[in-house]
Amino acid sequence: MSKAQREALEKQNKAILKMGLTAIDVGLTKYGKAVSLDEEFEVKHTEEDKDLVASAQYRYLEEKGLFLTNYLSSGVIAASLTGWYIGTPILRIRKNAKRRLIRGRLLSRLPLIGRFFKPKVEVAPIAQNTEGNFA
Image 1 (cartoon, rainbow, N blue to C red):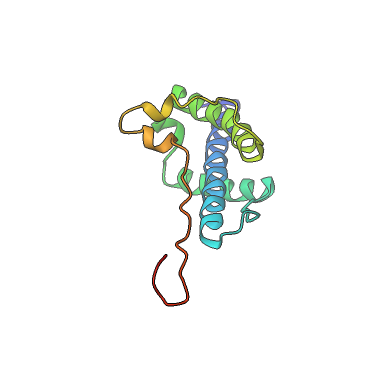
Image 2 (cartoon, rainbow, N blue to C red):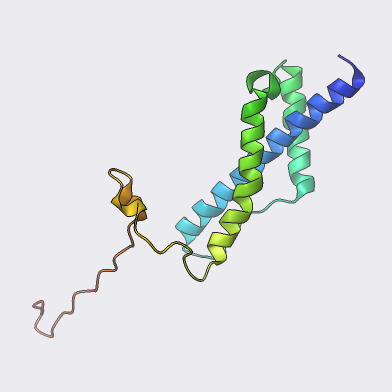
């Protein structure tokens, strides 16, 4: 393997590892928001931190003779990077959206998965009178 090929392989493996670290940040943010009930909660690492961890992970995998690009086809790599490239801005847009773009309930009519697209119904609390009986 030439020096240029080796550098390209290292760069591609580190990019995959950094993408995984970014996905972990997103997952931890969602988990933190759900557990702490704080909508401002965010887990975000700098690019330098991700590069440091990805380099350490790459060196370990290289030491063990494991290369992610040997196990993942170029199509899987391209699809995951494209999904990350498109998905990140879409998630940010949906988070800040003031209204829905599609108003129809077409997806809610699908069997099995339609329940995930139905609007959430808020349940009113039950009022209690002074005698302890429910009204």
